[in-house]
Length: 139
Image (cartoon, helix red, strand yellow):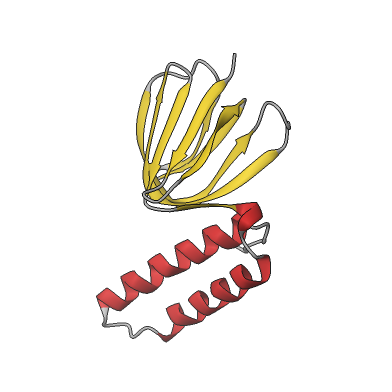
């Protein structure tokens, strides 16, 4: 038995296929889903989702920009604010965006809370895209 996995963003369906395993970036940490998983509804953080397809047996990385996932009856439905498959992301552009986002964090003034939040969110998005494209990020 396999999972049916759907990743749906406002502008497109990013993934709609069968899978053996899914790893989600939940707000409480990484969450693994296998067949016959208990019903679940969870909030997703900005991060990288990994799907192991039962046809290719390879892992596919998808950058998720936050949202929710529902697991029920071997169906995983993921509704996100944005998503992009890693193989469609240019690694060098993602690396440059990540480096710029890190620099922006350093430039934000300590007293400006709104700028700090915006810079932090931009860094999370850039990190997710860079990791999904295959880049390595130091902790």
